[in-house]
Image (cartoon, rainbow, N blue to C red; front, side):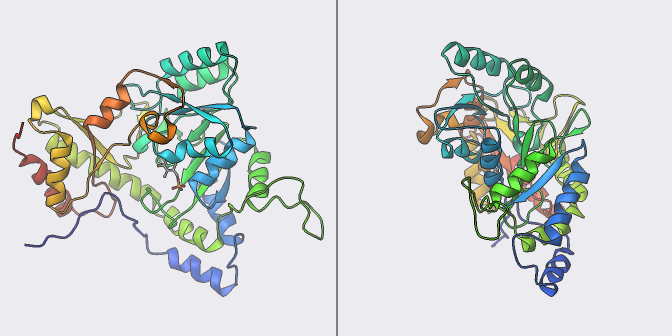
Length: 380
Ligand SMILES: *Cc1c(COP(=O)(O)O)cnc(C)c1O
């Protein structure tokens, strides 16, 4: 029997996106500026709260790049980055000609270890270079330990650029992820909790910074009747069409968070009792994850199968699951970057799997995943 494929995380439209796109067509705002973009930025500012300002951009990666430029990162500088993340967290460091310095994860949140962060800062300063910025990531929606990270960042006076690409709707101590750092980035790529097909945003505590980001994102054009430039610019602004999708998605964002959290609860209810399957869960009530993706660790000594055995079994059942992010300090392209840690994120990568987590999954889909996992037989 041919079953339908269950995907890891799919775009899930709310239904009103095309109304906003139609408005853009009706008024001919088919450009990278306009009423949808202004309104989407306002919607995000209101949702996040904490007095932040938002600039809509073409991608989360573009937002990280502009964030580093705003923080003055230049060729030869060093920037601290969580190792356990998607390559886009660190690539913009290299765009600037700077070097990423990678930090291991802590056990609780799987995000940046405050202990290794401080060790790295001290060591880099002792070696003659103070890092220019710190990029913690709220991976899979789980908030990083922001209190400890910010305390260290503040004591060494190093700004934080928060990678909140996977964590829209997540909170730490009741405050939205994406509002802790001097700057933060969001992503609306096709598989994120809300999507604009592709897109991102830079979030800033200071209004001047989003103004500067918008200026740089539109080719850094000075005020003059002709095209006058005193700085290098970029073409990173979000289109007004894409922002229309974003406005529609903002109407359903709370439902999307709720659904992903329900998926997580369902999996935990039906799988957590299996000896050797460990869930990444909120370490305490200070943490509120959007559970963008539900993630598990397999202990092969207890289950009798590895995460790769499980992934391949799911694949044969037409279910997409994915290994956790491969730590960046193990990626060939970053082999020469400094690294501070033990083997925490390396072990997570070896044993971890992301389960299908989209907000459009049906109860039957979730039951199919659960049954496939429960039917796994020991193979080792
Ligand atoms: C998706 C993602 C990005 C990049 O965002 P894009 O919009 O795809 O450029 C950056 N960091 C993390 C952790 C992500 O998951």
